[in-house]
Length: 290
Image 1 (cartoon, rainbow, N blue to C red):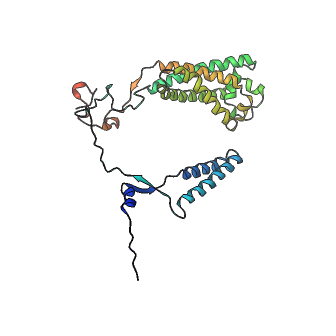
Image 2 (cartoon, rainbow, N blue to C red; image 1 turned 60 degrees about the horizontal axis):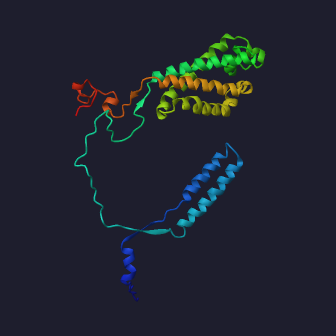
Image 3 (cartoon, rainbow, N blue to C red; image 1 turned 180 degrees about the vertical axis):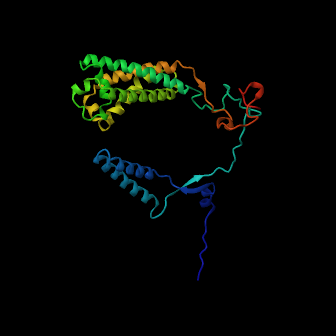
């Protein structure tokens, strides 16, 4: 049996000495994943979406298989043997003081509104929205009880005519009041969380952006939640009422005093664990113990 001796010249080895062979990057898996996403999204939207997803999924499979079969594609990446030294101009790392303006990392927001601010804003906005709803009932000629009964119409499927909805019903008043107050408080809490993210334009968020988004969301799902309300609702007045709620709630929440977050407190303090020495007793617990 003969043996073969491979004669490789230095010119052929030199270009490969400072490189390493790695699998070649490919975007076909992303195309495949996006195609499968469209396939399942088409089940609840349109068949054309599923068709487009199927085309992308097939293209992603073919492209991905061609990258790995019959041989996996590779590329050579140059390797730097020199180790880059890590240097700093500061002689030492300064100690991060708790609750100061010299923050080592910007974890925003630094201040938030308390829960009570969201509750106050939601209750104030509910009053403004109720006033606008009563004004709508008077202008429309159906009476002040019409918008109230319309809010709770889903609980009384037998009351479908305008005459039945326009008269006073004590049970509808109780249910509508509970729904109105509960939703108002929840949205007020949402405003309390979201307003610190837009500190310069609280009224723009509370009075324009949020009502439009909220109205669009309800418009898409209201038919399934309350068919009677969906048939008789006046969307123009509904948006006006939402804007009134948002403006009043945004003003009330933005005027409340903010509190600093606990993100820079030691973990035992944030978790409510008794940790002697975690807080500086000489400073009445305002700063952590050094």
